[in-house]
Image 1 (tube, one colour):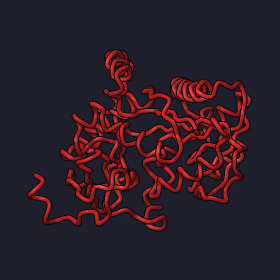
Image 2 (cartoon, helix red, strand yellow):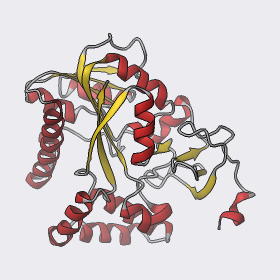
Image 3 (cartoon, one colour):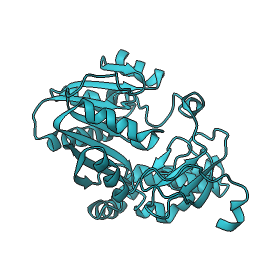
Image 4 (tube, helix red, strand yellow):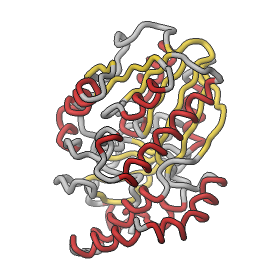
Length: 318
């Protein structure tokens, strides 16, 4: 498979920025399976450290169209969901994230910055728990929603060196954001500067060591081209963060269970040519309460041994 496709692709010209290895292994040809926006992309893996990169990498101007207003990470406010069980699921998700983040700081209240805060749902949960909450979000639609609908302190911008003063945040979070960054090393320098000494950095991102990646292969939702520039394993993430002055604290899996696998099934069915009607029928079945109940033990076990589709990794500023 690798040899058959090599003649069709342009390999990355830059070396791996984690380990400086100049060689890449071709994985898959890929397309945007989430919104079906046109474009051909390729995934390459560093055979030395395991980091995966998307080619070509689109600049800010050209990537915007891949973040439409109905993008999955731009959810409406929890209390605007149509049904009680949707509201309950969303409330439980916000509560788990907020309580986990607060618990990692060891503080009852403090100051948090959510980078790539989307529509501000997590920030609202932190604010409701007494935290001074700020966010920054490049999407005009999502940032305006957070400011106008949830009345949050959110900047519409990319995180830059002059965005915030030094040593002012107790906690910085990036929920499913780090893999979207075209220049992660610069972002880490900025975060290290704005965190207080001993402050907490929390990253939630796809787990390439998950069973989902092994089973779904090119249809795994964690690739999400072209929005995901890089996919990091825990080892590479530790190496990168240590280089920028962060100490690893722990990893925990508790997000992206059933939902992430459901998206991967959707992508798999698309790749196999299933009609929209068949995909919708399967989605309804897979997200039913009966299937959720039956698969719950599996997801709990996968979480326990860090083989879930997503991982949440905690670092401390040294």
